[in-house]
Length: 85
Image (cartoon, rainbow, N blue to C red; front, side):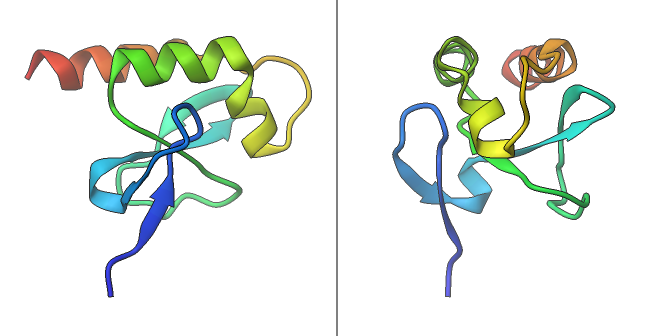
């Protein structure tokens, strides 16, 4: 059976392989490549559009159940690296 998750930005369902799991670590959003880091995770498509949408709507804070706005720098850098390859 294939695991299906929902993107926190566009709300479209996709397989785990098509999405990135994002977790909060020391106030920063980081990509959890192997989906094994502890804590709540949020799933997002690895596209600039979905990332911008999730940040502007506060989707990560809501999905991860944290107050305030987490640092998206590490996540944005990782996404740029993925899109360049």
